[in-house]
Image (tube, each protein chain N blue to C red):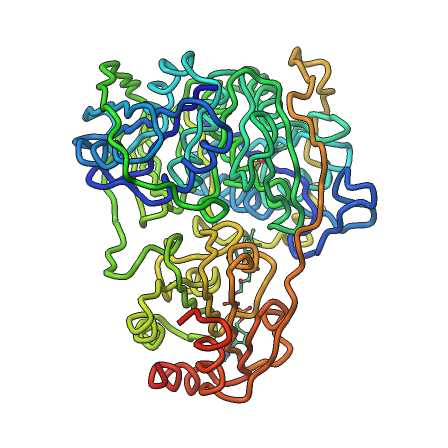
Length: 308
Length: 249
Ligand SMILES: Cc1cc2nc3c(=O)[nH]c(=O)nc-3n(C[C@H](O)[C@H](O)[C@H](O)COP(=O)(O)OP(=O)(O)OC[C@H]3O[C@@H](n4cnc5c(N)ncnc54)[C@H](O)[C@@H]3O)c2cc1C
Ligand SMILES: Nc1ncnc2c1ncn2[C@@H]1O[C@H](COP(=O)(O)O)[C@@H](O)[C@H]1O
């Protein structure tokens, strides 16, 4: 087995979720190469070289990979694919954008968001918003998949793998990067934070999220949201937790003013400890919460902050 | 320009499903079915482009059993002009769906194909990307804003770190995220009108695509149920429990 892992990075640094995905690759076994594709991504490649247990880092650094355009990146990986039995990426919007495109180009199937490795050709993944788990197997010669970060431990970073340059340039000219509007936050990333506090429609507006931020700052937590809070424009889309947003599994998840719809639960029910603060005692969120407070959030949250 | 929009029949996303007793599949007997919510957004976007004079025709395509005609009719009631059903009993893999769609594209020559970003049943999020790949077209996934000017699409995508804007050459494939638009409700007169709009049915087996499955589903199981815990009396009690009982803060 020879595995190619597509690194998640922002050119400057390696995203932690890559290390979770590496653990999945390790469970498959065999040699693991990590591919870093980007523009001016040298420092991300250097960071990738520290991942323990990998054979080498391959780096493709070119202006045509700015924005990690699916067309160009998938075409690049296709030129390298012949060397590999498995091509994997962490489940991120980038991995989900690129790998299905690659899979079709290779005429192979693709598994999205696997949560366990049963063997080199058999994996588990969730369906129906996490209400069922399927075990799937493929005989395709190259197996392409994305890996749910929260389902695997972090790989260590005490290695020193060689970094090799990939000189192929695959610029298809089908799309181009225009701009990006990135969330800036001092807080930990939602998908890797050990504590997450999320607000829902009950927050009433965006300004009120400041009471969650105060708690987050005391706990070193990330702040998330339900779809309703994002749709209402309280907070940006990158904060959405759920079936169609981000999947989180922190040690502690605090749901504030969130009813607990199936689609929200899909994104947080693997958290170790769940706390719900909601004024409606019948809210479904209480059915999955370890601890519930039936209270007005505008009383309970500031009180919680004081008590910390 | 013609737009092809893809609609999938799925179980109603708000209905809790059950795994079959033999752990072979999800039991969909007597489960309420619906149009995949992301496909509704796709139809809405296509219809708006027609209303804006950018598109000339909107064709709704579904691949599935005979009953998928209901979801095509929904799309027609929302404003699509005609429908195509590729009939196939039993579930089809995404790559096969993409290959069948490719055949329709070759026939219909649309300038834009709009899909949902994800099916709420399989949670795959892959068909649009596969289709774009087979066609050799540009792809704009997880779209929250779409503007067409000339032969280019200016497309904003919802990505993990915020928003990304791309320029895509047409023809292209776009997949919709939740914030792209708010789908309309079809009015009763439009539902009546939709019954008379053309709906062409083709058999999947006649399109020259190998339908042999590549993926084997070995088992379907129910995840471990979480137990609801205790409702506490005060914030002080909560902090105490989190500190001493669980040690998470
Ligand atoms: C295709 C699809 C995909 C979806 N994907 C997602 C997803 O990824 N993530 C997601 O979250 N949702 C998703 N949803 C939406 C989901 O179905 C729910 O609509 C949504 O989660 C509801 O958000 P909410 O709990 O904030 O709002 P509501 O359901 O309106 O709940 C608000 C809660 O706040 C409580 N409340 C109000 N005021 C106070 C107060 N002062 N103090 C205390 N409590 C208060 C209320 O009692 C209520 O329980 C999706 C839906 C569809 C159809
Ligand atoms: N059988 C199908 N018939 C019509 N459209 C489909 C079908 N399967 C997938 N799609 C389209 O592809 C999108 C993404 O689906 P998926 O890749 O299955 O998550 C859906 O929202 C539909 O627009």
